[in-house]
Length: 98
Image 1 (tube, rainbow, N blue to C red):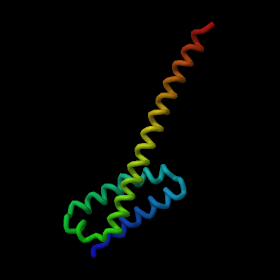
Image 2: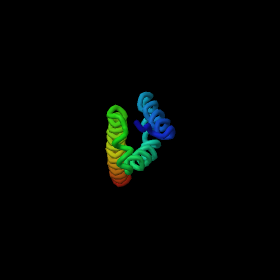
Image 3: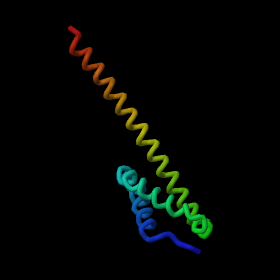
């Protein structure tokens, strides 16, 4: 059985730690690096076939977590933009009303 390189496992551990301590900004910071490393590993078909089902499941779980955090980040960003727009409208009305 082939195992993942230490750097991928270490990054996965940091991501899991960030998730467990609700440090989503840290998780997000590591997410792209992690996905890039895992993608590079899975380019080699023989490596992906050699991975144990348990390890493959863990990698898939990390990918789902990253996707969920990314979706949450996008939603929050959209809401912040909406609040900023409403604030500008309210400011305009305050400035121009009696």
